[in-house]
Length: 121
Image (cartoon, rainbow, N blue to C red; front, top):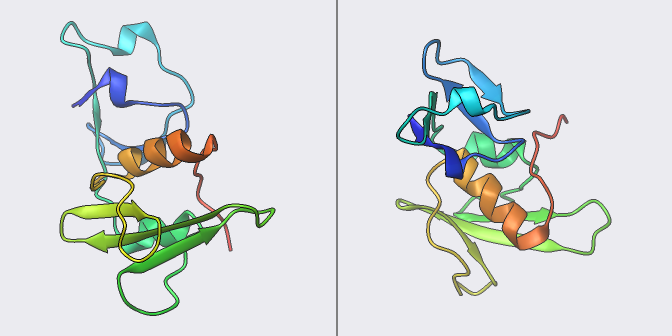
């Protein structure tokens, strides 16, 4: 279960009943229980997910980068045992660690105003 206020349109989760990966396209009032939870499970943020969102790991270390389509924005971060941390380069942290895919998506949206989606290569 996950708190409804953590869910944004476009987020990826695992369905609690089937473990199938789903993307949120709408949030219905009826899907929220009396405690404010939705029957979804968070997905651990892995290298594969970060890569699927278009980030590259050119140096083979913990550094990740993502150039936006028009090349104007450069996002970088480090993956640590605590999770993914957006950085300003040289190890200057801009976020708390994000352990789950939806947290990573929500933070990226808060910083850039753009949704993260899986990029088919």
